[in-house]
Length: 274
Image (cartoon, helix red, strand yellow):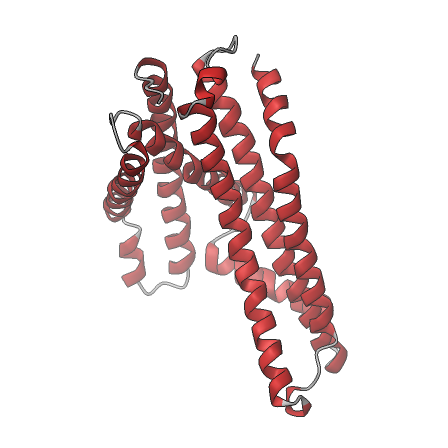
């Protein structure tokens, strides 16, 4: 049944997600092309320079809006499908609560991941356009520049092999899931209120975030992550990021599992539809 739920969820949502991601990527391509043909600002009339600045500001607003709209659509759909009148239909399906919630989480995770990648690709296209302009004006050894950038990136963040690369990828994936689950768990807790359930969900969201932020901070202090900032060895920054990412990945994974189980138990045993 999980497969059928996933298929239905994808069919019902893919157009919105793909539209947002395509617009984001196309916007980056347009700005990148413009960046490659970027004129000398000293010769651009002031009114046009203002318009150019507004255009770039609009692009960054679009990036933020793309991420927010994707998340808002996910959260609103989750709430409406499960905890409003639509929930009566949803929970009459021959599926367990675990299957229903899991289908929502899986599709939401994929949508958030694709949105994250589309924003990254969009920014990359912009950077590529301006980098190409710079090389057009002042030719450089591209391979040497990329190699220098790679070495700097690896030195700062401590990415020196397959192990640390997998660690950062795991951290990124769990962080996306963590971001989604917090909203879903807060909404589930909000349903425990007899009235003003939306308000309850909002309050629980901020309370959960505050508690988990304190936990993250205390455990990072306990792990010695922050103490590395006061050391003077050459690899302090890489050690700091690696230890902090490791600690936060473990905390986030435990929190995700706990909130996932909590959402299922609350929805299964304390469902209170309007």
